Length: 173
Image 1 (cartoon, helix red, strand yellow):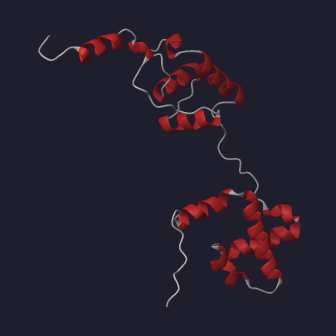
Image 2 (image 1 turned 180 degrees about the vertical axis):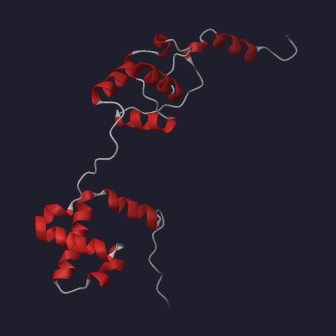
Image 3 (image 1 turned 180 degrees about the horizontal axis):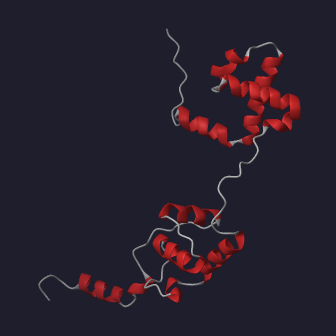
């Protein structure tokens, strides 16, 4: 009788790998363990496949440990591109979304949408964003995009007419 191979059912290897890379403490532990194995005499070349990384990365981890200790095995934040809006402007945008309506800014809508936010920000701060960026900004502000529920404030008065048409029997005009 053969043994059944152990399998992962709900995650792909890529999904699990990305989860590992997100956890800073886990990354640090992996790097410490790789350095530990090097201290036992294992060659970095032999550890490449086990840690799914390059020979050079393992050598860098060992050098970082030697020079800066265990804390040096945590990646430093990378600066990246400067933000287009400062924190005060982002706070103003959040307050605007929570406390005002697009109609207050001359838009023909009572509901904030990505394109309306893009337009409002461009007019107010002279900064242009794409649609995907707006949703990232909302997320960073602790806000979420809510899909429409089929009832829109700008359609007030129209709902009763639609209900009346629905209730009118066919052929009774």
